[in-house]
Image 1 (cartoon, rainbow, N blue to C red):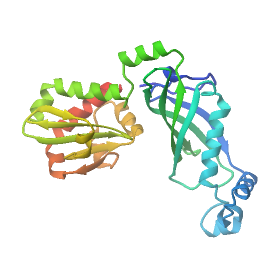
Image 2 (cartoon, rainbow, N blue to C red; image 1 turned 45 degrees about the vertical axis):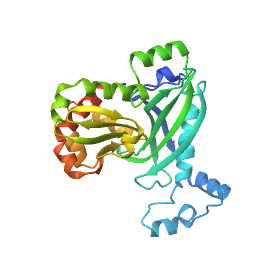
Image 3 (cartoon, helix red, strand yellow; image 1 turned 120 degrees about the vertical axis):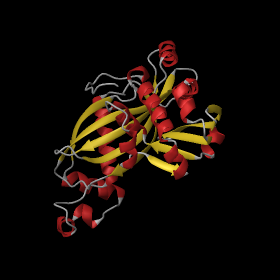
Image 4 (cartoon, one colour; image 1 turned 180 degrees about the horizontal axis):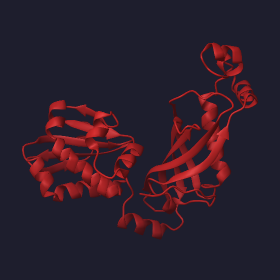
Amino acid sequence: MASNTSSSTSRFYEDLEPGLVIDLGSVTFSRQQVLEFVRLTGDVHPLYVDPAVARGAGLSDVLVPVTLVGSMTMGRLVATGILSESVVEVKGLNWQYRRSIVVGGELGVEMQVIHRELSADASRGEIGRRFILTSSDGQVVHEGLSDAVVLTRSSEAALQMEEAKPSFASAGWLADLVRRLGESKEFADATASFDGSVVLHFGARSVGVRLYRGRIIDQGRAVVANATFSVGAPASTWLRFAARPRNEFISFAMGDAFEVRGSTYDYLRMTKALMLMTDEVRTLIR
């Protein structure tokens, strides 16, 4: 797994390995910033502009709009220059909040790379980014997801790198996972009585295998669409899962970190097979 890094040096595709966490510094929101923002957008809600209304709602001060939080976070990224020479396209922003943010508090900001996929010509690639805002007590208060297209430093070097070690959740990585499962005698033994399909979701990316008495007989989109059961989680959860010293699939599943859909009966009787599958996931990530 990649270690945490703090740097103002511009990064390219080759530098943005899934699991990498980059410190973007901190951000603080003032009443004046909130007032200017809501007047500009027209979203002049009393919770944003009236301290008395905010206190009546149980807040210590006026609320910071989620859209302002996302905008300021993107501003922190731009200010660092980390992607200033490489990013060519931003593909949306999905923002979620766990706790309300009021004016005055300082929040730490980090960016985690959660997946990447090289383009066909290897001149650029798509990366998945997770932005994390934490309070002074270490609690995650907001997080956002945003994919971006970034240039490679060297098409030839990037292609060689991906061929030698496909990036987590890329097409090559998913193919490696299926190949390893197909070569595993333990997995064949654990699925010897099973006739159905199992799908693993890694955020927006998925891999499915159609099994018949211990053999993988099919894979692809049709398998994913018609799974007997599936197990899924955001890519960031899989990275956290892989970073643990041992396979904690059961505790992650019982704690709802993994979402299970489909046949509960088949899911439970395939526990050993799932442990073997997630062992392979951990090995390939690590």
